[in-house]
Image (cartoon, rainbow, N blue to C red):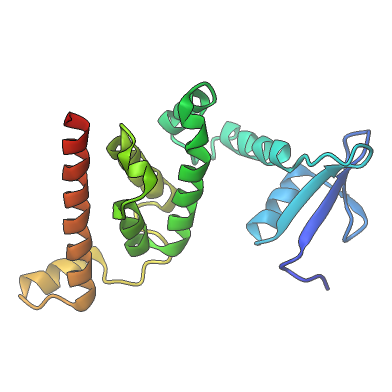
Length: 193
């Protein structure tokens, strides 16, 4: 049995067939997508040249899923990605996307904290728009509530506030919202200068 944390090496032959070096059999793009969904790291290399083709195949998997109607990326996000290849934003976009996915994995309280924490991107013109897009992206990716959510449900929070006894996590959420609002105001003021 293979170690789940090891990188699964897939070799692409000249015939463009993909060979799983662990199981010694040929695999499809859907098989590779299944490995990734199961938590495996995958590396795809060209057998002859040794070139790393992982990015190319991952993009192909995404494109195929999107074309089947399994769209995860909103149209405006895809449009912005295309634009980023021709703009100065191309150096910021990979960092922004990586940060977005990290926040998805960490849960909503950490996500809001990371969005509101001052970072080098916060001084960029249009940062508040990026934050809004990131929020929309997170909402689209998680159906509105990330799976890692461990706080009270929105209904529980409303009931707690209505009874006048806010829980510690409700207080923390309010503090995060307040900090986020302050940051948005600072960004708007900075853009106005």
